[in-house]
Length: 299
Ligand code: GLU
Figure 1 (tube, rainbow, N blue to C red):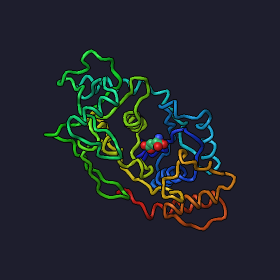
Figure 2: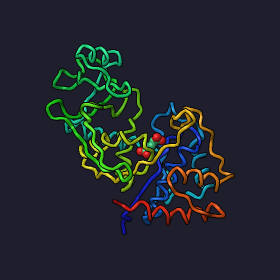
Figure 3: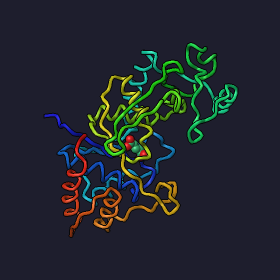
Figure 4: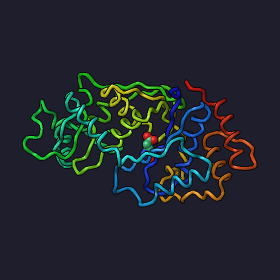
């Protein structure tokens, strides 16, 4: 029987698990267990430069020490290049993706010439210079592969429901533009890899940190172009440091001490609104599953 629920935790192995990443891991595990589903672990190591040697094994070890064990062997994205290449080829063949030869500088110059400013967090909305109908690469070498995201006349507006954040909407054309699927120097973009793998692993439910919520419309756009199902989504609260910034490896979050499993689970549970009494980590997890099931029905 195919399971009706498959969830996953998909860490990038840029360092060991910390108090912030545990929240996402725990929420995805609790949601899978509360809905009698499968829980998978996927190591997102497409960007080799950001990966830290051994961090993947350490994450697996930390999760196991907390009692969070995946239902199948972990999958590494670095072994999945053929699947991403096949998806990119399908998009190219259908006219949805194209090679781009622009440098950052050229993109900035083109945006300035068009009187456009980067609208969000300084993110560049690609002006479409290398779209085939506008002349393509014009003899330049490709730097990246991009996916088309609508046009000013027919923008791609994605509406989606998040189980915690409620109804969401983004005009992907205006706010993101034609985004990168693969950099010419090699790495596959997170957006393509995540969509291909979620479909290949039969993921029905994406439970992850709120900082990733604004990637969801890009992923839904790709799912629609590739004819893949869109999972349900639940984006969890983030753990913030004393300055209010998201706790992350980049801002120096300490590795999680799994020798204190119960304390670590309690702290992550508190961020998720799960507060249960328990004498051991295993006991805490069992009670937390019941609490979670009562709070987060599958709607
Ligand atoms: N690998 C991503 C990260 O660690 C998460 C991907 C996802 O859950 O979709 O930030």
